[in-house]
Image 1 (cartoon, chains in turn orange, red):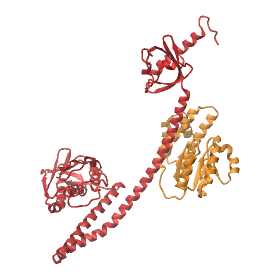
Image 2 (cartoon, helix red, strand yellow):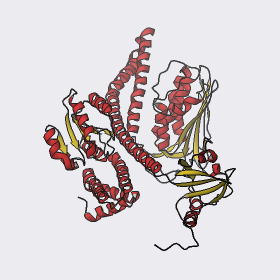
Image 3 (cartoon, chains in turn red, brown):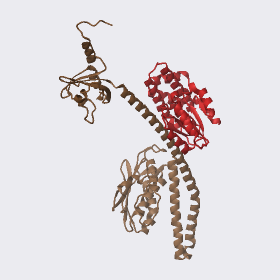
Image 4 (cartoon, chains in turn brown, green):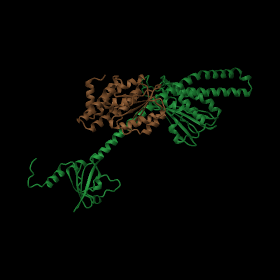
Length: 210
Length: 388
């Protein structure tokens, strides 16, 4: 658990673009034994949601939001060396943003958290062309394919990806997640009942039970 | 809003604002495109006055294609102009050019679209960079894991092979001692082949074990104060038989007062023996090898010079890396796996020293081992004393 004072200091430094101050807080938490998933959920995810909300309320500019995202990606890279501990795993997942979706940080957090838990993860990043995604799925034959969608208006790209994935052979299941599902989860689930929707990083805990 | 005084026209007020305050570029240039006057914002941006300077000296124009006269022919069209700022970084402005009687006027504002494009580009680069870092860290972790598995395998394989090879060597030596006189020449030849092959295999196994221990960080030294002279004598004794077989003469040149050093004597002996064995193996029959040693207040130096084929310059940099064998052939068909010098370098480095080689093709090579007299070994911070 990350205390509120520490979280507020981090958020203030993040909005002010103070990369080193953010880094110090993250490393202090990590050195104190705070689990990576807690840092991801209670610091990274929470602060980015809050910054997104500040932007929606016009209280910060889009430039500040972009800078906060870039700093968060940097901090994730700082933690990477402690992340990858190879161990035998029969669970694998491809995590990708659909075409035209440039918000990749949520998908990357999902891949990292599953990596910590011993999954084999393949993270394809932002704006992945559909053909590249399909090639990767055929090549790696994962158990799951996770598609990240932040901007609701990119839903047609997601639907095209789902239809194309359904056309492939393989026992993989599809998972979708991201901020777009804040508004569209019910409608989406009705249309695609077999597809799992994760609205938050903590939802991926349930994947482990499948 | 204050009423405009009659003495000021709107044009005058605007011009005054642009000249003194506005975040706009406003340059008046003569017919040669030298800046006659520039507004205050331009001077602040660039860091100094640009009056008298040529247009091309202030903007970025690698291809020499910006011509204010030509651009002024269509004064409605905006051009992207990059101005070199006081930070030596170009900043982009969207500028229009206007012909006047005495030359050209350039008016520009910050190019927001270009800034937006660059920002998107930077963000995308940042994403790609962090994705590549992620992939690199993952690959690195997997490589480390594979390397650990390799070391475990090497260590286990070498450990399990050592005992049977030791038994083969012991029984071969026993046969030589007890039954050689009753054997025919051909049988004695077989026995010698068994002995030399077993010795070679033991050397490989020892090197594999050492390499695995070095890689896993468990290559431990047993430091005590030992005489360099003793190490040299033991090493020379070990290679003397092989040298005699090839009629190679080993010349020694040591002073009487070689020092004692804080070292792992058996490991340094392994280094000297490895260098000496290489010298013997690569030297032609009948040649000479010089072994010299000496010391000053700081360092003890051991040199081994042979008359072998020499080592090509491009191979020297890989010579002390694991499996970095030289291309030259050993003169009596001896075999190696290219671990000896890598292990030697590690041992010498753990003593705070260096090992190096100089070589000339067709003339020979000199290996130099330098061991400091005063250094803080892990076991003993005290400096060693000179012997005698």
